[in-house]
Image (cartoon, each protein chain N blue to C red):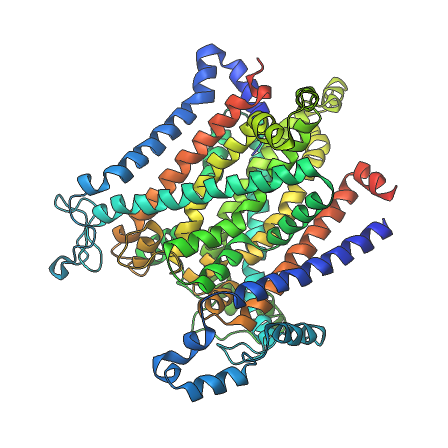
Length: 289
Length: 340
């Protein structure tokens, strides 16, 4: 995770252009992948060659061909079309869970750290409590209890997602609180809410952005995993994890499960590159020559 | 140090108790109805059946009473009766735990044996092919969904090349070794049944690689980063100036210092492996706790879910505690700080 110091030193070795490429090349690549998937998700209805739910039993399990680039599944549905449509739910779930989780975490963690005392103690114990469960098991139990569906699965994920943001936000606010500009703001007579959200949070936002970006990938994997276990989406809605699940017995018809998995892999790699790049850019240690 | 230990263990017990309460409340405050999930449509439409079923499992008592019954049971070593398997939850857990322990331990060893040397090599041969390989492996490990990786491995090595055995812990044609520990490798070795040993070992290869993929990447990255950090320290320069050989510097000076963060991560990784095998076990039909958890969750089997959550939370907390303690052992500065 903390490959920043060494990246910086090796970048220093490789010269100016090399340094730029080393530091931002992969990030740019990641950004392109992520943007590409976002565009695909938006344009899915336009660019899909077939409707995603079009069942045609005469065309079951056809291998990739000119008509069906990625083949067809057990119900004769076009894998490519379902994969393109599937990007909508995967990206949506991943981004929304992380975004709401981050906002909740920052509010809870930030307020607790700024208030201190009992509130802080309570918040820390609450995060401890959530963090003593393995996330996937807790999310699974909650999702199963709430019932199958995209919204319920996202709620289950949110419950396990906010604590890490709360902890990070707390530690960031604690660092910032002792800075001089905060004292200055207090002297100016600003209220605690204004100081926290207008002064401290904007200054502490860098590491949060990094965690958010890296986390979207993990959220997409987790959501796909819950869908794979049958908890995320209700069929016939196309979703990557569910698509892998539909093809998991079809070892000879490898295309049914392989391509959706590659889609998950590519989007997660994209977010990882992007997140690493943002971290290197924000981290003063790696900016030092 | 003793005081610290007592405080930690007490805190741990409180956390474990709270954890059961959390799960209990989640499981009871949600729309899903275990009776409907268990009985099926025909029986669920008969109010008499439903009432009897509720009375049988104590579901008609007030919430706090149900929780109290559960708590009282825990102190008597009783986690209740699983609604879906109709057996004591503790028996279920005892039956399924060895399969998970065996798989997780092999995966853990695999990630350490591959991850640490790879991380060390990547650090001392920075920006060479081996560094790039390490980077690729950790990225692939962190980025690929376990359930998909498991499918690819099975499709490739079992379906396609047919060089690996299929799902399960052992072939049906092979006699299961007499159970002593429940770990097939050890049981087979005790019985001297090497055919069963080889068969069980072969069955472990694919799932343990899949399960290890994530932690392997993390351990490699952490080892590399902390090696690089250690390399900038003054004692390394001193060692060089003394004219020590590079081998001695790396193994004798750098590695012991660089491994401290890896120990922390390693403890966590083992906990993750023990509890995070849900996907891997589901795909490889591995009769372990992961699959049991999944089945309990889907069946809304409250006693099953609560029992497993308690066990899992305790495992997590114990491993965390052990990690912290080993940290103090490895780094004298931490020990001194806590003794004060």
